[in-house]
Length: 362
Ligand SMILES: [Zn+2]
Ligand SMILES: [Zn+2]
Ligand SMILES: [Zn+2]
Image (cartoon, rainbow, N blue to C red; front, top):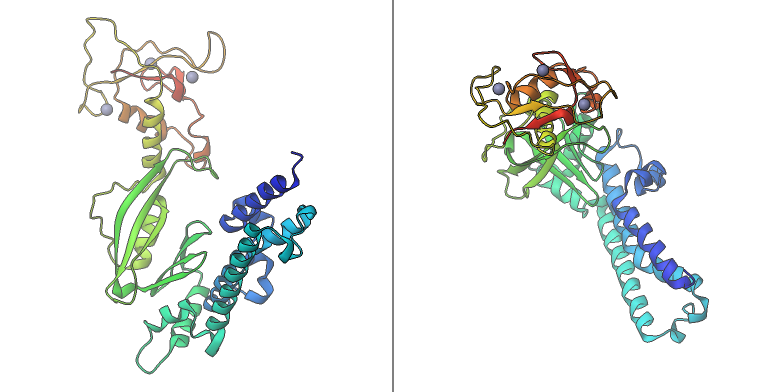
């Protein structure tokens, strides 16, 4: 590209998006507010609430600086436009400069207002105030949370942009701009949704993400959603000492094998369909006797004489669920990332097969 303004605009947009949404690469490079100002923010372990009061304030300031930062960058990227001298710039740029300056000044004013009276105006402190006992203040609540956060038996999960933390008496969700807090005894947790991902990006294993709504009987606490992996569900339940309602009957796969079965089925459905020769009757699956056999092992992954897979000559005898359970039962339980790519023997003739060789029978 030979137009410097277009190049700069594109580069700045990518930078701004990464700075706001912080993908893993950005985080490992240390380009986050939390990392760059770790000294001023203080340790999260020592002073959880104060750390997040400062972090959210700084995040608002930095994100509001992005439009003005673009203008300043353009002053240097396209010098012929004379953006440094605002009265020479075109009207469009003047309006843009005015708006971005206003956003920055507003955010500064907001940060200043929050910091007054020892941060008592900050939204986190006002949220804590609703939990304070009569004649005590948010500081008492903050120190209770700080103490509990330091304990090693807390439950912590979720992505960095929406962390879920459950301590002995508090349920919390930390997001980019805020901190949601609810008291165990006040809140009802309800499973509202779940999403199944065949492969998680970081571990190469199937994951089910469960959405749970936390609603408090305290009217000042707004309901909020938390998301976690289904395999962490039991741990959360133990920490809560209270049942989690499952109003919509979402099926939660608590173990790796259950999760794997869903993934196994979804992969097999993508495989080539096997047509039985005419006249061949399908018998009930010999594993469960509940449904008719509906899969056949056909070596499709490689040509003759290649690879480890072998042709199975058994007639269809198993259903998809039982075949999936068999496949999962033959895996190394400690290494779920190898499950999808591994080979197991046919339950009847012991010919080795892989997931690509399992053909559904319509
Ligand atoms: Zn079966
Ligand atoms: Zn076989
Ligand atoms: Zn194979």
